[in-house]
Image 1 (cartoon, one colour):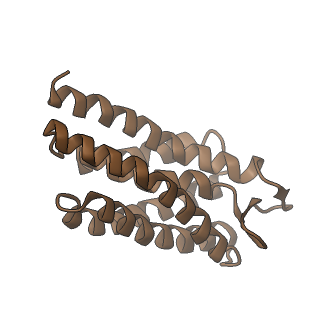
Image 2 (tube, rainbow, N blue to C red):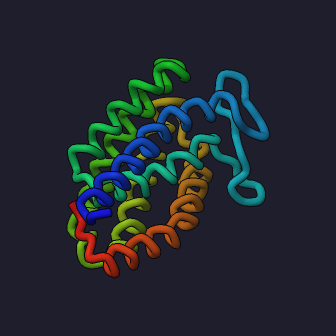
Length: 187
């Protein structure tokens, strides 16, 4: 497979996965958890004694996938996926949750983009790590405030998303090494 075709195929796979993480996270918040609070989120443990809304797992992955979409297809595709994901979310989550998620994700993606873009060509793993951490903090604060009017789960949100980012870094490292071996350049 040619490098251009490989980049396109992988980019589309990352794009689809990224677009689906948003509605998956919104669905999980209302349906998956070890505890579901009345008129609030379903929660999962992220550390002993620390809980977070269950969507953190998907959003942590989404932050990394956004960077990979940009690497393979460019900024326009990753920004478009945020919009499509928010639209898909409206089928599985209440409108207030979809709006909070959409606004938080859009703002966090701009923060992620601002950190990732200047670093990505030289240090992909560092770029993904730094941009994801900036994005997850912005996303957590904005989402919790808009969705629930409270920052009670902020520490859990940050820890839960950070776990997912850290777990995905070996994949990013292997991808970067393979790209170098194949001479595959970012979009």
